[in-house]
Image (cartoon, rainbow, N blue to C red; front, top):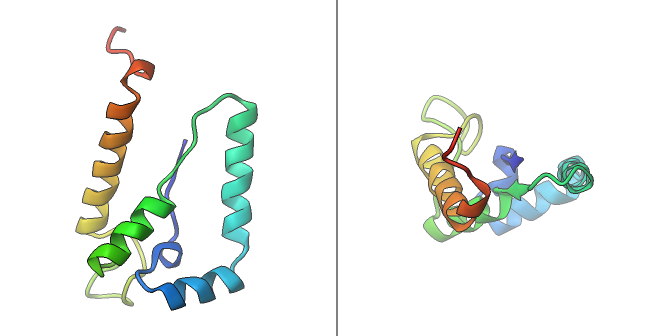
Length: 103
């Protein structure tokens, strides 16, 4: 199971991210519930929230949003899609033993 964060969960600003976390505690609970369900069902859970947030802060760039919308809001943009792909490939390569190429 892969958890893809909402745009404001990974907004590349510590102060705005903190404000968001204070006002929107539901996403934290939602992620925790998903993690707990996966654990009980013996399903691997991988949250992309922290690595995307850290990369957004490091680059000072938004993984969501386009020029025709609010800044850092909406769907993943080109950079966001590339980042998600890189993180998933890294995770898969680190856990190759769980992926079978035999049908």
